[in-house]
Length: 235
Image (cartoon, rainbow, N blue to C red; front, side, top):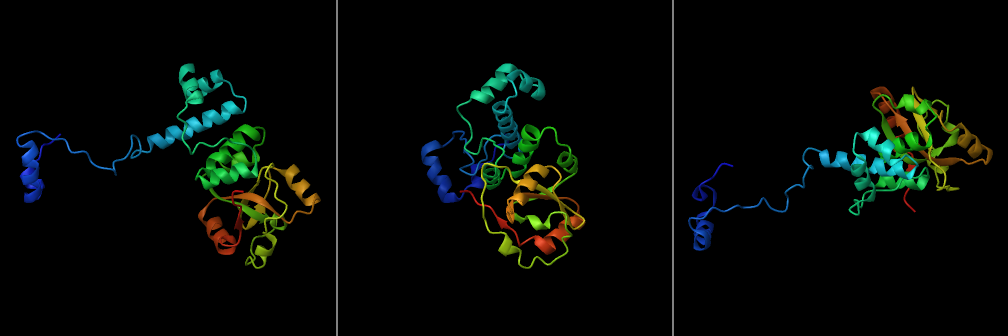
């Protein structure tokens, strides 16, 4: 560490005051309350928190300690420490394949992590939405989505959509619909059974996650629907 002459750094009055207590001594002055915790500047700490959260979620859904150790290249003891640590961050949320869980993750800024958990832990056999997520994707939701828009051109101006987006018939124990928006149309390719059930019950609008990619689709979606949908809130 490079030493500085206090006379060149501190105001004269402050220097005289310090000399009363520590003249001729070497002092260490801490940086203050704005000092970042370990790993915050590089983002490494956040990466570890995300990894550990995923490990706990996978374990809670039946993946063994040995399988987790192999997947993450960690020792069995390291996995156990992650699983049984008493110092779990308050932002750690247990995953479940429900609307309520998706909304809690979204509120905590962990939206994409919920989607990863849903696809990896709940919809393991489905490939449609997995394929769509291979490229960089923007997610919009959880919002009340009018089911009549699915597989229809999204070239309207969004008028009167709000009337169909009331939070009617909430189903917190079911997952949100995963919908992707492409070339002006909305598709639901993963959860056909849930969609059929909702239509059979004549549900007008249902909590959904919308995924889109590419600048053209983003501009088109934002122009026609960006400020229309109503977000689902916790509770």
